[in-house]
Length: 546
Image 1 (cartoon, rainbow, N blue to C red):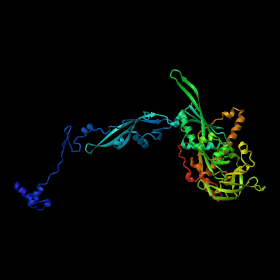
Image 2: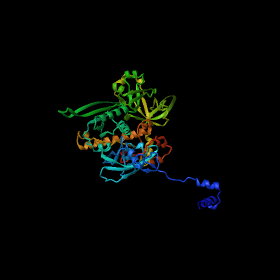
Image 3: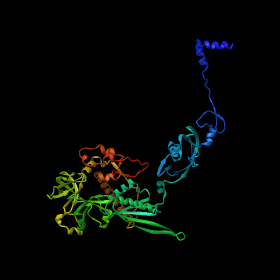
Image 4: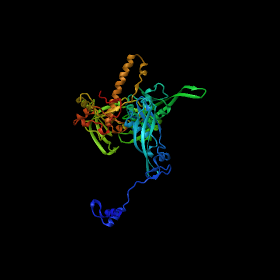
């Protein structure tokens, strides 16, 4: 029978086909597929072959892929504003069990860069438990390419820590350790307006617990002496200053010899401001290579730039050089007089600052005398690139000015100019544009202001409350006029705009849409120089449009 079955298998194949003897012999020799097992090298259990030749339980006992990964992490949370500290000093806003908070927790866990993170999810905890739990699933290559996966829980302990902003808001402003009193003995505040914008741009006031303004300047209060010194270093880099310090003993412990002081720094800014006219002393004029005698202060940074409008010669004076021999302004910007340009002859062969200043011979007449008499003046100026016949220009009238200076007698009157032109005036164009726009100036930019409180204690000491209120109103009107002049100056001077931050006005479109040929002559801030206001809360801005 066996021979019969074999012959039957040899005679028939798949599908009933007849197979020859050689084909049947080959089919009988085909190997059968079987699943092999190996013994674990540690416990001897039969397992499927793997690169490590170990079972899962033995592999977990030999290798810990979570080694070096933190199981408990401390994170700082400000309970006032609800933000988490992302070192070194960034504070993150995130809700509980949000994607932002999960990402923040994963980044705060050390050791995850050595493994592959597969999954992460929150485990519910009591909201007031000050604990966050995250389940992490990781993978790592072990033993000849074998991949091991493991899930574990990381606990995050939430510690309360006030952020700097909330700490300053909650601090007692009267418990200061160091105070910086910034003063400038002049009759306008344009310098402080510009200094305020520099402070805001560089966040130099970040450590101040309180800021006060008064008629003489600004006071900054700090909780640490080192913060006050850092602020003074910033002032030295932006304006020419000198300062002196003093300290007063508050208390001391005789047992531990610990002394508590209050430190006061008195900072004085140089008297010279932009567009001030200066008469150089004869000795100093000789040291400067006969720069003067009459020069204009054309730029104020940590150095002063003096320029002779008659020759376009320039000279920089640093803070140390200025305070060794302080210069006083002969005439200030409040004494500028309007002139009408009658004739201009520009010489483009004599220029400075990239053709910004061009030498020119100009014939002008006082605006108040124009049409009444034939008095005119011939002078030289640096405004050859900006003036045309019929324009209005601001300058100093030395013929009718009341000048009190002993140095002026040491010079020959022929060497002194009768009229010194400073800058072109757009006062009439701005007034007509404002009238067409319904009383609005239509500026396309706005400025931020420091959150400072006004110290009116000095005004109320001198007399009755009615007099003090009248003095405050007058000071407010003067300050508003100085702010308008400062913003007009920003529109005209691109160098000043480059040093501060200007923001888009909320209603800038009203001013830009109504333009005509005459408005094109009035300088405006280009839109590409303006920043979007990204403040996440109420901010103090000024646009002088009401």
